[in-house]
Length: 97
Length: 200
Image 1 (cartoon, rainbow over the protein chains, first blue to last red):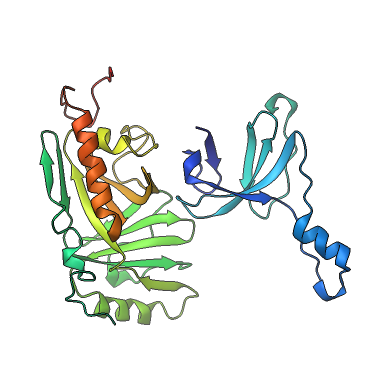
Image 2 (cartoon, helix red, strand yellow):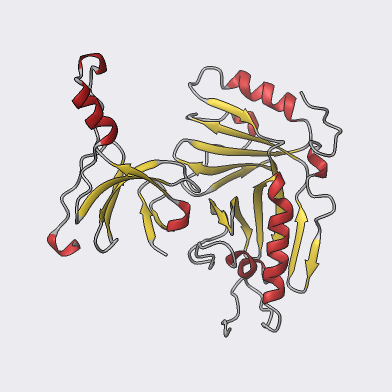
């Protein structure tokens, strides 16, 4: 079982308390009526699906209930860091990878 | 409003036929009837209520009432006694100036008291948190999971936990605790909340 650091509880909590919420930092078009079909489809359906570091939303469902963001390596499943929703994606130090 | 005397909704019957459980080193009882409110977004509590807003992962208690930290803006208020309606109206009136939400969940949950030298060991059977007193000290509270149900776990004393659970899960919770207790057969019962070293 993974231990995931919740930035709101500020402690490591077991993986089973969390739910994955998909890719993070997907910006909704500011004016949906002005967005083209391609832009809207991109927002709704298209995800980067990278091999390696991936910024994801997670929710501490069975804990504090908050959404936060997480940098996870999709190859090793290693969680490099977690950070609060609304903050910028951090650049991890090389030794953290 | 549902008929409060019906066994399916009566708050004082949530644990009937299931609790108490008692065995060597573990006792599980229904906690006394209490009003429960979930408060979100408030910055302070009225002084007459008793406890103030709790610190992160902690509890504030005063005058027999408690405020439990559930999340950064979410607090569970516990007040012994059966009359949730009057207390709710008073709280709602005095919180009206704040941008917050107050929800009466008295009927949704049941409170269990899990105590005894084996309490932390039996809870640890289904709860993945580190329940050693150094990591989960007296007064700490966490919403977490116990096997397949969500619980709110509050350590009242070294060997005494208060567990809040949705009422339909009470038989499940009690059954899993009884099974966990049976699984500790042969383990020495030690005091002080420190489970004996496990040699399975």
